[in-house]
Every structure is written in C-alpha cells, then in structure tokens.
Image 1 (cartoon, helix red, strand yellow):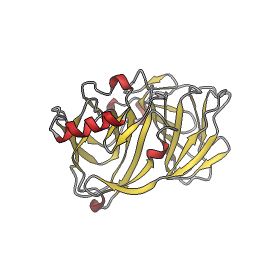
Image 2 (cartoon, rainbow, N blue to C red):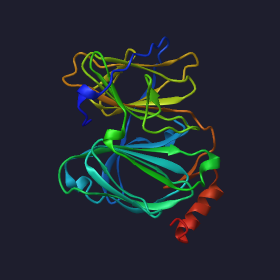
Image 3 (cartoon, one colour):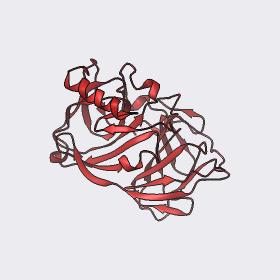
Image 4 (cartoon, rainbow, N blue to C red):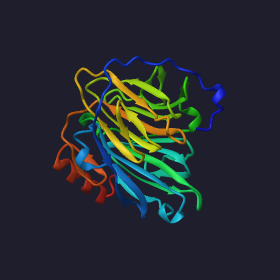
Length: 299
C-alpha cells in the first residue's frame, strides 16, 4: 500500500445478518517451483472441487535471495488464468504472445492463458524481500481455448478504501462495499480483497451463499465469527444456504495490524482434468495440450 491514506476514500459498512462460519482451517504445504523458488502451496489439487473456481493458491515470501533468485523460467499454461499479486519485490514477465511487464510492490499481473502460451517470471532484484501470492482461476469450458490475454495492474490502479476503526481494503477483483475492483470476470465473478485490520477492527463483506470462499491470513491473526484463524493459515468458509456474507475481526491482543486475503467466486461445476500447467475438462484435452506444447504450438 503506497498511497497517501489521506486521499483514500471511506466506504460504508455492509450489514451482514447471517455471517458464514469456518468449515476447516488448512495449513499450506512447503514446496518449490520454477527454478527452486521456495513457496507454500495453500490451495492444492485436493481442494480444487471444494474451492471451485480456484485451482491453486501459492504464498511466497523471503528475504533470502537463494529462495527466489532462480525465478520461473519459460513454462507453458493452457486453460485457466493466473493472478499474481506482489506485496514486495520486482519480477519481470515475458510471454510467447508478445506481452512483457514488470510486476512490483503492490501490483498485480493478470494473465489469461486460454488456448496456451509459454511465459517466464524472473526476479529483477538480487537482494531484499520478495513476497506475494499466485492464484490460479479456472476458465469455463467454452473459454479454455480463447485468445491469450494479459494485463499489468500497477499498485496505483488498484482501488482502495478505508473504514472507521482501522480498516483498509484493496479491491483487486469484484466489488466491496460499493467500491469496484480493478478486474471483473462475468462467469466466475471472483472477489479478491487485501484487507488490513488494526487490533480490534471489524470488517463485513456481502457474499452470495452459493459462492465458494476462503480467507488466508498472512499477518497476525483474525477471527471469523467466534473462530480464530492463526497467521499463515487458510480458512475455508462454510457454504451455508442462508448466509449473506462474512464477518472478520482482529483481536485487540494483536501487536500490529492483521492482514489477510479474502477470495471468493462462483463455482463452475465442470469437470477438472489437470496435468501440471494444463487444466482442461477431459483427459483427452490434456493429452492434446501436452502434444501441442511438445510440437511448438503454444508459442
């Protein structure tokens, strides 16, 4: 957050009468990807149907260059969208469709792989902190072979608002308390919020009951209703038919502001067939994607 808070508008609070509870709390799995980049896989393959339309959520954060310096050299994708949110650091994107951009502090890279491309994400720093998230958002069957698309969203382009009591929200996608986000998607209707709560602060967000939703806490801890979510944990929110939103609160005992992602979306309810960086609806489509990549047809 690099804007002058005096120029960030205030937004009204949404009344939530029947807030969701927590279904379960998930600890991510430590792994590495790309050229040895260390990360935590928070949303993994076994949770894809439960958190449809989201396929994966990775969290990365280190001030040790050895944990990230290799970056993510050329690799393919087909059939979904990647949303990379950089909290701190600098990473250069290049792809076979001719797109290039620099992802840096507070910015977002939104890439629609569609029918397929090859891209790289390489650090443009040799020291300091690199921290952020990559979310994979599925595409509906009729869009999986669409033209690839890419947008760099600089930090200043992400709408933000505050509320009394120490609430600060960045609206990456969807809509929150009357503030439209930087991105909208008609079919999956993703909501992607970066929320900061001062100790004791409360926040509410309306959510359609049928949408799948998660909270990932990456600073301090928060409460969802009466249940605490510790730092570095994901809470899957229950799909309760009568629910109308979520209610979050930071404990007064926190030593500093809590910070979390609230992510929700409309499920596609379509078959998911995945092999590494290819996510389609059938095994045959995945085999075709692998063959196309091997034959140089992904750019």
